[in-house]
Structures are given as C-alpha cells and as structure tokens.
Amino acid sequence: MDIIAAISTGNAATAIGVVRISGDGCFALCDRLFRPLYGGPLSAQPPRKMIYGDVLDPSGDVLDRALAVRFPGPNSYTGEDSAEFHCHGSPVVLREVLRSLFELGARQALPGEFTKRAFLSGQMDLTQAEAVIDLIHAETAAAAKNAIAQLDGALRRPLEQVQNTLLDVASRFYAVVDYPDEDIEDISPEEVQSALETSETVLARLLATCGRGRILKSGVRTAIVGRPNAGKSSLLNALAGYERAIVTDIPGTTRDTVEESVLCGGTLLRLMDTAGLRDTEDIVEKMGVERSRAAMQSADLILAVADGADFAADDLEILRTVSEQNSPWILICAKKDLGGSIPDIAMLSSSPAAVIQLSSVTGEGIDQLESAVAELFPAGNTQDASSLLTDARQEDAVSRALTSIRRAKAAMEAGLTPDAILTDAEDALNALGELTGRTAREDIVSTIFSRFCVGK
Image (cartoon, rainbow, N blue to C red; front, top):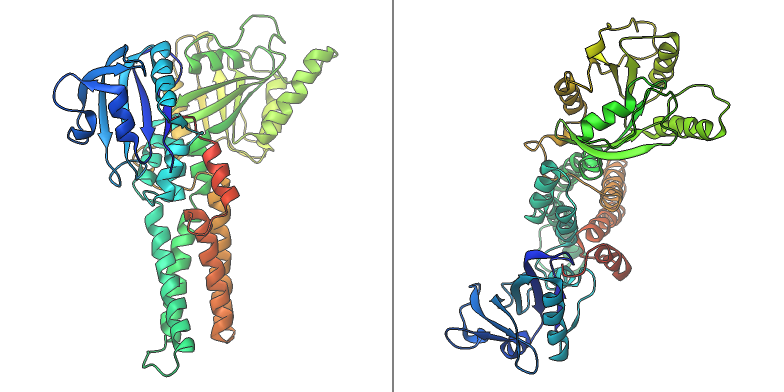
C-alpha cells in the first residue's frame, strides 16, 4: 500500500502533537525527514523506542526538535511499517511536518484509514475497529471500559466461539457428502443439537445487552418536566454544575427544551429541561409546551419536578400524566430548603422509581437522585461493563444470527433433512461474518470507517 500520513492530535495548540505515518517504505522517507541527534538514521534505531532529534523540511532546514519512534510491521497498529513524530504541539509546526511528508511522497490519510489498514491486515476485526471509535468518543468511565474490553477482543471471542462451532458442523457435513468413499465419521444429531443450543445461548446473552449498551454509549434521554417555576431549570443547573438554563421568578421563562449532558450516579444523562406544562395563549410558549410533551414521550427517564414548598393541583395533574407514560420516572419534590412535604400520590397510574426531596440551592438530595439513577440504569457501573452490544449494526447482525439458529433448531425438531438445517446454520454464519468482517460488504466497511477522525 502507499504511504499515508496525518496529524493524530487535532488542531488545537497542545504541549505535544503527534504526526503519524504508515506504509511500505515509510522508514526510508522518515530518514529524510528526521535526523537523530545520537546514533544512526531512524531506520537503524531500535523499534518502539523514542529517539530524540531534529525534524527537517525537504530543503534541510529544522522545523522542530522532537521525538520519533518506529514500529516495524507486522507488529504495529496498522500491521505495516509505521512511525510517529512527537513534536511541540503548535498547529503550525504540525502542519509543516505534514506538508514535508507530502513533499517526500506520502499522501493525506483518509478518515479512519490507519484503523482500516489494521482491519485489512488482520490486526483486528470490525467489532474491535468499532471499539476504537467508541473509546475515542467515550463520555463515561463505564463506556471507556466497555470499549477497551471490546478492543481487547471481549466481543470477538464469544462470536468466534459460535462461528467455530457452526463451521465445525458445516465442514463435517460437507466432508461426508463430498467424500463418501473416505472413512469420515458422520456428525451425530446429538452433536448438531448441542452446537445449536450452545450457539443460541451465547447469542441470546449478547442480544440481551443491547439496551444497556445503547445507554452506556449514548446516555439516557431524560426529560425534566413540571409546571412553570417548579424548579426544573434550577435542577438542570445543579446537575450541570453551572448556570446552563436561565432561572427567574417569572413563570414561563423556559420556552424551549434546553439540553445538557451530565454524569449522575455514574450514568450519562442527556437532560432536556422543558417548558413548564400549562395551558397558555402565548404562541411561543405553547410551542414550547408541545415540545415538552414530545420530549416526555420519547424519554428513557422522566424527572417529574414538583414544588415541594407549594404543591398545587396543577402539580398533581402533571404527575398523573407522567405516571401514564411507559418510561420510568422519579418524583422530585424541589425547594426543600423552603420547607414542604411529600405529596400523596397513591392514586397515580404508576409509582415513581423513587421520591426525593431535593434542594438545588444547597445540593441536599442530589446524592439520593444519583443513587436512584444508578439503580435504574446499572450500565453506569464500571464494574459491570465488559462486552455490551453498543450500536444498531451489531444488534441487527446478532439478531439475524439468533433467528437463523432458532430456525435450524425448529427444523431439526420437525425432522427435516440435514441440508435444511445446514442452510439456516450458514445464514447465521453469514450474519456473524458481517459483524466481525469476515463476510462484510465493502460499503459496510467503508461506512464504519467514515465515522472515524483523520489520523486514527
């Protein structure tokens, strides 16, 4: 493959910036760019060891004094010869180093091309490649832990177990059919049944993680609802740690949904502070109320805020509406610093997951809210995250494979011929092949790597 290069540390000024290069022949190119202060050329230096020296432009002028390290293939990230230059993090310096590499024969790397080369060279499968971008974009410790576990093969290993089990069944069946004169032992119905049941168990367990994986990666869509001036925006600000939403004594201040991401109980909440729910003739506020109702209907969690110091009939009506939704909800009796008590909610359609008296001013009750959220969404527990399915592509592939396995079991129980059972097993193999990359189409592969940033 040709030689590619890119800045791997973004465009902001930093203490250290990294320029990455990969491809056959890149060490010879690096020798023209980098002059070690001690020892011979970079290509003769020990691999995976930082070397101090000058980075030069094609005319021989010094661009920077930096560190360089080389990684000979196949024991490198991409599986081919590659190197990195750790320079001072001025964007100007990094761009000049990159421009010099282009003049020497390298080309600009496409988004995700380093990782795509790692996939094509067999250094990782598609689940591990997707884990790279999940790790880059992780917003919680649990999400990072799940991503690094998948990068280490936590998802690949159970999938390979299923693939190898099904391949063994298929290969033994075809061996008997294709070579009838050979003394090859036929696979028994008991062995086929065991293989299908083992595969079903593994895939069903993986598929059951989809909901938690989505929450771990994308967060919990959380609607904060209540009547005007109940304390919704104050709660958002308290959780965010700064004044994200405007707070006044004037009812109807919030006229549109205000969104903010916060960590609460170790779980990422995508908070939506909504307009106060009430009847109004103000056209703008009415649009805000409609958006509030839509946010409530699409939420994974509802924080129903009632004024604990001045609970009114309007509060009870809103709680009645909230209790009729399908999402779990938490009742927050706000303004605890002003007094008040917990209202009687025994007649509601559903009970809240927790009832919390809270003060956004003093912070009292915030720890109880965090505990309640952690109880509802344990995906935030760093000890619990390991190998969860985190996107729709993974869920679809595992779901199709599981359906095929169950269809094969049903065919076997109905007494159908082995070739019918084998067709379903091969369908499962194809679905899993799409997931790991063994049989993935080029457009699927390209779509996955297009999500990456340049330089990774």
